Image (cartoon, rainbow, N blue to C red; front, side, top):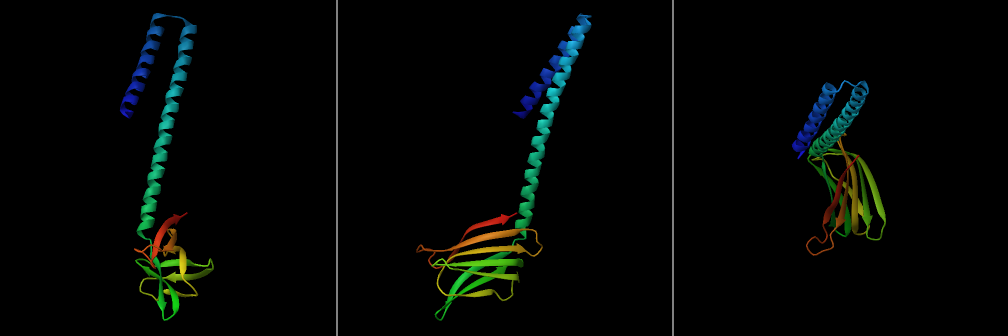
Amino acid sequence: MHRNRWLMSALVALGLVALFGVFIAVRDDTALISALSAAGTVAAGVFAAVAAFGSLRAAAASNASAERAREAMVRSVRPNVEPSVSAVDTTLIGTLTCTGYAAIDITVVWTLTDGEVITETVARLAPGEDPLTSTLPQPVEMVWLSFTDEGRVGKWQDTWQMGQEPHNLGRLTLIESRLAD
């Protein structure tokens, strides 16, 4: 498709050059030669604009490709930060664990079933270290996390929801994970 377009443009340009050449060779009229010269300049300007538009599209595609490559690199160093809820005796405990890479600047928001929120922050959570624990006065409805990888390459925001269906009852399920800018 693009090849045919370029071929058609080249043929039109070649036709215009041939037409101008024939008029100049056959007629020795200064006004005609000036008019054809002006028309040639306009045609050259149109072709330059088309080329500039093509360059602009190529630059946009290159920018999009670079952004996808950056996002892939950022996702490769993403820490796996995961909340869970368990009962110890009659107390609910919310636990935040980290695997893979260390996470820094972590904020966790536990949204309870009555709408109350418990917000905690921790500077660093690494694999193999003690998890962050929170005492919860009642069951959890949703958990929101914000964290950055240790190299500060990317910042993530995850939303987890407590399962209500028989297949996931009592388990937190990741419903949204996004790379924040």
